[in-house]
Image 1 (cartoon, rainbow, N blue to C red):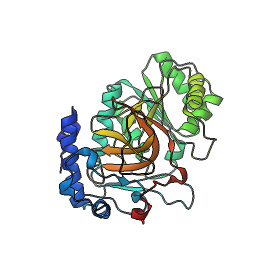
Image 2: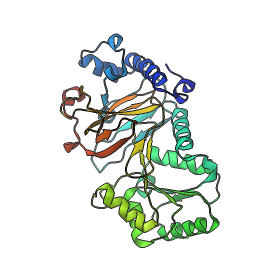
Image 3: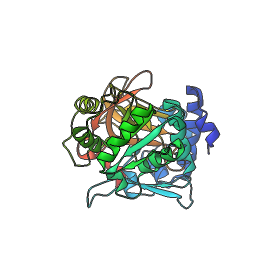
Length: 326
């Protein structure tokens, strides 16, 4: 089993490859769900000698199975959001320190020292339920910032507006993490001109507003907050790592995370750079569950490792995997 030092010190492709293959072999032996999935594909783990040969577990397995590679009492269980009656994903995290190191180190990598920021979080839909990994991360970043004005906001937009004006006047580097519909609501009610503000939208209309394309959404938010770019965070319940975009919808991963794309009709076939495909994620921080996940998202990956998210599969199904999900 790879250790934290090995994973979080990855600095090149060779180190990533070695850690990924070691992680695969560990999870193929110790994650019962993943082992059964691999057997169903008639793949012998010993024959997998290249990262491109590693099979990706459909993310839907987290809805009906306990995807764990270490038999230990979960320290925390993260759950996905969903409408009434919908089956939601559960991520049993047996060692939450992996998650904490992952998002803390990634934030440092992309944004610098958290102590320099006032961190504000507008996450009403997530705060109103238990088990949100996003709230866990935001709460930790708020605490790590050490700024007395850092904190959460629900629907008290007037208070948030005053707080933003206060930080702008003080010249404080400020990060506002927000769920998309809440940021739109705020921008319509309390337009502000704060060019230095970092707006980080986390996605999700949650049925509150009509869906819109990224360009339209970011244009509205840029005008509402007086900023030139909208940042984004790409993460999910089933992961312990996040990718970040500093504008234009182009995401970059930390060194222990990688995005690949697959043919939408043949999950075992990868697609080339710049072509649309289903998003596969390698998240080596996910060592205690599954690090190799086939998502329901569509996207493009570029030669430098950056990627775009373009949408989701119709009917939220990953074609070619249904038989194995049953």
